[in-house]
Amino acid sequence: MTTSGLRAKGPILIVGLVILVLWYAGALGLNAPQSIEALNRTGNAWTTQDLVVRTMTMKRPVLPTPDQVLNDFCQSLFSYPLTSVRNLAYHAAVTASSALSGFVLGLLLGTLLAVGIVHVKTLDSSLMPWVIISQTVPILAIAPMVVVIFGNLGFTGLAPKAVISMYLCFFPITIGLVKGLRSTDPLAQDLMRTYSASTAQVFWLLRLPSSLPYLFASIKVAIAISLIGAIVAELPTGGTAGLGARLLSGSYYGQTIQIWSTLVMSAFLGLALVGLAGLSERLVLGRAGSKR
Amino acid sequence: MGKSVALPVTEPPATTAAEPRSIVDIRNLSLVFAAADKPVTALDGITLKIRAGDFVSLIGPSGCGKTTLLRVIADLEQPTSGDITVNGLQPEMARRKRAYGYVFQAPALYPWRTVERNVTLPLEIMGIDKAERQRRATVQLSLVGLSGFEKKFPWQLSGGMQQRVSIARALAFEPGLLLMDEPFGALDEITRDHLNSQLSKLWATTGKTCVFVTHSISEAVFLSTRIVVMSPRPGRILDIIDCDLPRERTLEMRESRQFQDIAARVRHGLAEGHSYDD
Image (cartoon, rainbow over the protein chains, first blue to last red):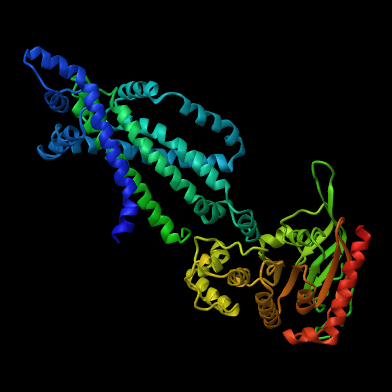
């Protein structure tokens, strides 16, 4: 057990260790100039050990060490109530809610577009170029405009953020689903024809089920992007809540440790969202028995 | 002859109720596929009448248009010229009325559906209620010897079993006409023999009209009441051979003199087709 366990987990451990060592080395190198300056200012003699300790314990380091980030991460999670703006979980929840609503909207819009494109020939040629053009515009350029327009219409808070997430999300859904809906087995289609099945029946009984593996691959991409959309959307809203707002305030005040712990939180949130997508895939396809 | 064919044969326009109904009636049918370089004549001047209760095999080398002919009957291909009626209707109308069940070369089962739900698929499309759907699936699956496999998924079954499921599916809505396109082509000979005798029994008990595409001579002789020998490029009918073995077929019959004679005639016809070709 131990050897096989080690063989499986060994590479993971080694990669983790290498990253940690590189991170500490990076912190040492990047924080050294500032630390040396500070040590010199005290006027006392200092040793290499003093320097190392100082680079690892700065209040506003260029690159905080993993333990500093972890410490800040845990402290913000457990030292304040969940509803406090000082608690990272609160910000994560705010971002997650707009990411998820944006994802759901994107899923709906993307599905609608894909179904239209697959069934109506003119939509394929007229709509597809716009779908692609929409994704060539940087989201950072679009986001403030969406916020302004929605603000004018009287929508603030969740709505504009969800729309920006949706804007990013629908694209992989449309592309994946169009591919999936078109990948039905020709024989299975002939079979439907021999039953003189209606277009709706062909869609629900054949096209949609056979496109599900493609759809779930797209969903995993889309749900990860939805998080990016939500965080980017929080930057121009000037919001006080959300991981994006926390990143922004961190950079205003030079709180690098806060920025890094927020990044860690968004990484975990991303993992959780993609995990959720994977779980729903296993529930849906597992029950359908098409996966082995 | 085991079948009642000794009836007054009147010409097509007559519609007397007493004669064995002509299920498929093809007259001077041609089909040309428009290809990029030059058009391909897949079927040329096909005239064929298939009567109720017939088991007709279409045999010929690859590319002789036998599958195309079957697909024309099923309204999956459109003929370029000539007439065809299925159950006295245009093929499209016949298809809309679900006149036939079609068995493809591959089982074409839906992998996300259980065996039972694959068999009930056509019934679902026709809007038959759930209890009746299940009842019919049970009946059809036992007919192809697959009772107890209702809840299995297609990938849990062997190739031969999958093809039997697809036959049960074609039978599920009880069509009078069964169109089969080399259903056992991909199976080993032992399985194929077994399925042939099962299919023969099925045909004998249900009295369905069958059109069966194959390129195996012994399979054609074993199953058919009539064998249509076709030649390639352009697809033409070379010979129509009556196969008047007793209606109840057994695998041992294949050693009989009569069987050998018919097989020889089919082989002869096929060889003749080849000399035309070269």
